[in-house]
Length: 109
Image (cartoon, rainbow, N blue to C red; front, side, top):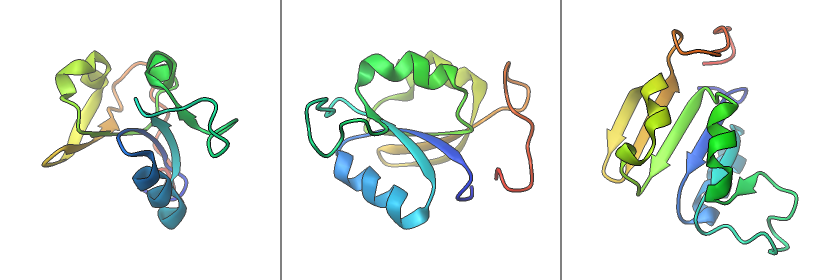
């Protein structure tokens, strides 16, 4: 994974994921139950509520990070390979055979 990678993160709390994006430079879209659309910190940002999850998966992000949620909740993960499993955290990468998967390039990790 590189700074050019797209990552869909589904997590709580928001502040932990924002910090990770800032420190790593990874392009991150966050879907969380803690989303507050009226917050001055997230207005017009890339943080979304659960209602945005279908569209987020439809965009075919190369990586998906799931925190504190069972993967069985996300049938879309059938198109992803599980790369890492830790307590409460799982990382997935879009399968090259998945419909709509972009071609791998040297900087797309």
